[in-house]
Amino acid sequence: MAENKNQHFVPRVHLSPFSVCAEGKAIHLFNLDRNQSFFDAPVKNQCSRDYFYGQDPRLETAIQTVEGHYGDCVSSLLKPRAVIKDLHATILRRFAYLQHVRTEAAARRSAEFAFAATSVKGADFEQPSFKEAVKSAVISAMHHYAKTMSVVDDLKVRVVRNLTSVPFLTSDDPAALANRWHQQHRHAQHRSFGISSAGALLFLPLSPTLLAVLLDGDVYQAEHVGGWIDVSNTADILACNHQQVLNCAANLYFGERSSGDDVQAIAISVAHLRPPSRFDVVMAVADGRTETHTHYAVVDAPDAREHDDVLIHVRTVRPVPPTWPSFLKFRNNRFVFTNDTGAGFRRRRTATSSLWGSPPWRKVRG
Image (cartoon, rainbow, N blue to C red; front, side):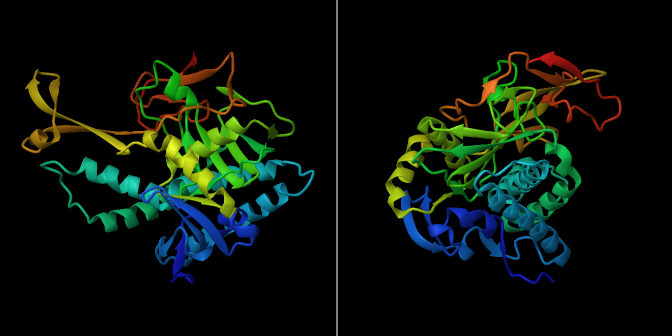
């Protein structure tokens, strides 16, 4: 059995630099649902649930190992004249991806996806309770992470050094997946994107003064010195903070009580861009057949439940930020990979197919 009953899906080692005086004891938060700030909340009670990962001690130990390396990495980067080493980059990739897949918000999205896909007549397996679905999603996410952690190894790691008076915020879902290329390219903007997609970005705040950006180096470029990007433009810091507002489940975290009004203003400025639902479900029913094909017609969900032959397409809905950091630019000679299927646009490393007979991937100008 796991030693710790209270298990964090955003670890205390991540929240600590954002806490009051960076002591890891109390932290201020702004709740978007209530549109209200709460001060001096115990860090130990944030982003945690009883046996969130189940009761497997091996899983708990593995997670704690990743978190421990991350804590040492951030402490090292916060030192004066710090150098970003290859090991730092590897640790930040691993932790950012782990954080992306393991939060309660991520588990709820997975559960909602499953519910959307099984809410029609003829589903051949029993639908679990939502609580059971969330718990199952957490365990599945951990196994998926173990099998796919190398999927982010090709992403470039840059660390933004905040030289402004506006601090970076963190949240209850801090590893924000975004994709500027996908949301602005005419052939991609109506498709879903994920961690394997071309143009992938991960924004992970490390402290009020540091933020890691993982980026697809075949699509973007960001001027840097040894991996460091010094930013003195307040608008760029706000653009990074917008990612936290758009991605979080409910809570933004900060360490200075005097920042409460500013955090509220940041949240309000982009809250209307948060999608009301994270999934768009399209259902189609069979309405004609030939010797070789079946034709499907799109219908409303209630109508689909009356049919036995139903196709369901569940598309992830991603928020579109109002602005992007100016230090993040498109490469002039950017490129992506496609095999002209529903797999979408991929990066060089992720342009692979597990299905036999899948069309070959080809490199195209992005």
